[in-house]
Length: 378
Figure 1 (cartoon, helix red, strand yellow):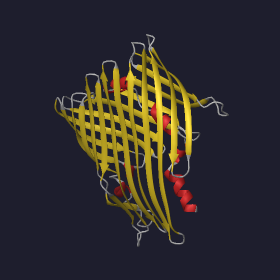
Figure 2 (figure 1 turned 90 degrees about the horizontal axis):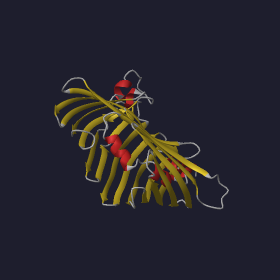
Figure 3 (figure 1 turned 45 degrees about the vertical axis):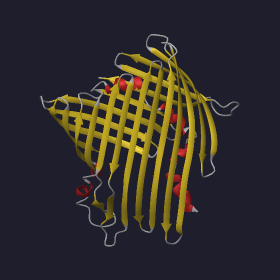
Figure 4 (figure 1 turned 180 degrees about the vertical axis):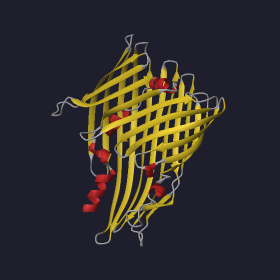
């Protein structure tokens, strides 16, 4: 019984948040924010909010670039993401060679506090700016791991690659009349790690896949959009006497519809679905097999009414509703009321959203979760 409880705890930490999908509805940037950030070579944006009593959601992007000569330049990007099982903290230093006005050759060095997690890559950037481009890159994550451990004596504590992971990335960004497409995908081969003790006591192999799509199109006063986020992972580990095999995937799909009545008022309806499946097998000789099969379905809608009175403020009034089901017997319903405002002034944009308890009567606090966004153009 203990292994099953341990597997449940590490596999679905987001189940601690009864408002998970409603929070995910508030986290993405609005279309005008996407255009604003993509239109500059130098900028910062962040989306942050409360997940539960223990965790924050944090999404941070920074970019800056400079030409050192007519054909040589340096691009810097920083990506930080904190969202339960999804974590990134990457500093990308990318010297580039401008082969022609629309084509760059990029080298990429991604640094981490632990040198063994450094990443090295090469790629091509096709496009005049960050509004319309294609970026293809090939990189080796953790390329420095084996070298960083070269002075570590062989044994159980020295775990090195037999086969390094290699990651292929594709990013497409495209704008047209009242329309936009953002597509990004990552895929790795299967990697192999092993300990160097006499009889291998630690082994690990796995692979990862991601696909992200966001698209919208305006048709006169109507607006149609789709967001699709897919993640897949396989991880097999042996840490004697424990053996674990974990395979999971997750999708978030969100169509949305809007209609602008006039320059001041525009309602938008978001219909969001989240599915996650996690199959884990845990084995210990003295206990035997423990099999954990987890799946969940979450449905949510979000109606946001935007009001533009003129000037620098834009107000948002909304309501959210979520229906949560999983195969472990959890079945919950939640409702929230939202009040938010945007403040847009020259190079600084700010967005504040207060989500309040919407199920009445209730013994809960009126305050539920708060989300903020900030965008700076340098």
